[in-house]
Image 1 (cartoon, rainbow, N blue to C red):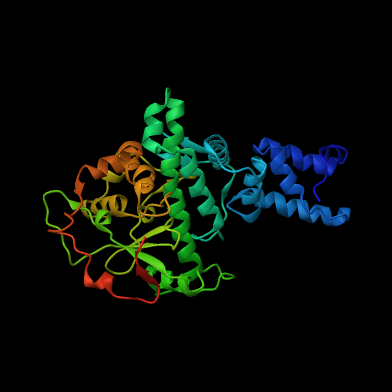
Image 2: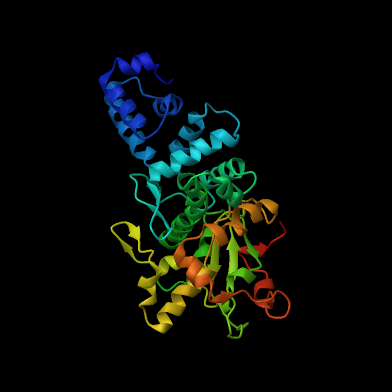
Length: 349
């Protein structure tokens, strides 16, 4: 049972953690969750409190998710409380839009490295966004009356980039061995038990990837080199595989200095022509976390429309040079991707 506020204030070691939690943005409801199941034995309390406190800095941990629900006293989600929780998450991650319109995360909190792409937290995060932005991210951005207000929907949109980075690192760190392709790692992830952080045999979704096969304007689309899309069963986490079975992701090319991604387009334009082409291909064709649960109107409002308006300068600059293949005359969902494989199935959503 969680101690009362009076009991917390009367015990310095409890008050110490309570005050630190408040400084991180947690309210009394969330703090009650933090102190729940506090051992009676005071020597055991020290270990319990320290472990719990560390977990509060791991965005997406089991405790973190419970504390989010505690923030709104376990109420049903609505527009207002969903926005409150999203702003808390952004604040704890240290979200800020830089001079090149890219979201940087420079806070004290980080995504817990052991949180799988199919985690309950990512499902909850998607639900928060769906509830907070019923008319879509672009509509909210356009209704904003100040630059500060505009940063909120822009930050939520670009947060997807960091969710992608987390998910790719998770697959590679826990399911890829030396010599394996990323596709083999995905297959390992599917077959791994839930205890091992996998999907326990639940297949991923293989979906059409036309928008992830952009090519340079004025050139010809090469149908022999097809990028393929894979989604977790909940539709949220997305992975793009190139023709060799490796992830096509901008995070393999972004340069990070002092915890920030270098976002100046000119920096990447100083590379050789071949390197620049590789970087741009990964930027325009790479993965993108989905806030929607399926390919529907909400997917259009939250995932498809926002890039044209809310992307950073680096991606907007690259997009000017690339185009998607035409659905019928150029791009075909090749037999390679129609074949049944052990780790994915055709999308029926």
